[in-house]
Amino acid sequence: MDFTAGDKPQVILHIHKTLNYTLFDTKWIPASPRCVLLGNHARGTGALQIMNMKEGELQVVKEKEKTDAIKCGTFGHSSLAERSLATGDFKGMMEIWDLENLAVPIYSARAHNSIINCMDGCGGTVGAGAPEIVTASRDGCVRVWDPRQKDVPVAALEPSEGEAARDCWCVSFGNAHTAEDRCVAAGFDNGDVKLWDLRTNEIRWETCVGNGVCGVEFDRMDIPMNKLVATTLENLVHCFDVRTQHPHEGFASKRVNTSASTIWSARHLPQNRDVFAACCGNGDIMLYKYSYPKERSVKDADGIPKGVAGDLKLLNKKNLSTQPICSFDWHPDKRGLCVMGSFDQSVRVAIVTQLDKV
Image (cartoon, rainbow, N blue to C red; front, side):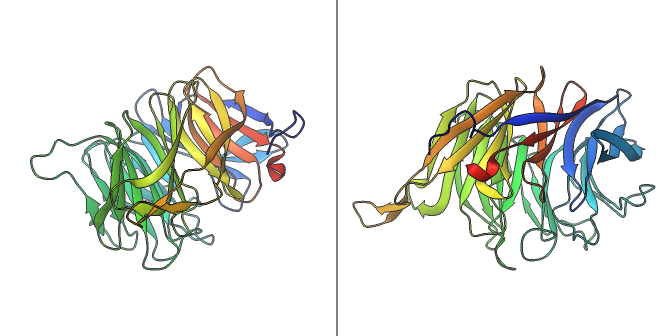
């Protein structure tokens, strides 16, 4: 589909608010106009702020300063009734917070021996099965936690004895379409992408994309595996069709070079899983759409099915900062509404228009 200038999605900056701390993660609170901001004060302490969007402004509703800087957070494990926030900090602690009372966390576990780079949640508002949180750390470990069970992870992917630990930068839940099925995609600093099947507790597939993997995300976590996007240090966006796995060739993929320095993450639009925003090191937001091929699988010479990659089209892009866009979250209920953080110590709320026409 070709777009005229008037049909292209437009990224419109709605709110720009400066902060007095470094922002690492931003998340909308489900079913609300509020968002949480997570980061690091100059004195090394952690910042947790709840902000309400009202009359074109972001207003601080509550805030908490904790001993250690906060790197990441998720609501994915939590029901709409609870809306509890899980966070990971620079010392490897995972904590869960009741946003109505930030005095002390309602759950705390020593998840890792080093910084928790990334986390994701499942089984709450999205995804079938038990509530779980997956954490990734500089210590090379990926661990899955049940917030109903203290101190011990329910599953762990760790370096083998004698194997050098690679810094795990990103994780994402997927394939959570039944109570039994669930998998985790993990990206590492050496370019490895690993797909971990939690049902069998085995690595189902792995590949190396050549340089550090900054972000991984399934297009949706609550359906049978469909697409997985991985973004890298050096301009590249890889989109894997994970519907059909060939025993030797793995998954078909499409790669695009964005020419926009590091791609920190990709976030799929909840209302249309074929559209995603890529967050760039030069302060750009790039909107892509994936188009499926006529046939998603063909048979090789031996009659074994293998996937066929589709195409990625750049819908539009917008520069919003002089510094990297380090976090991004689409609102789950309001199509096109998004909140993002940048290393210029700012939070921005934007509206992307025309998404119903792509």
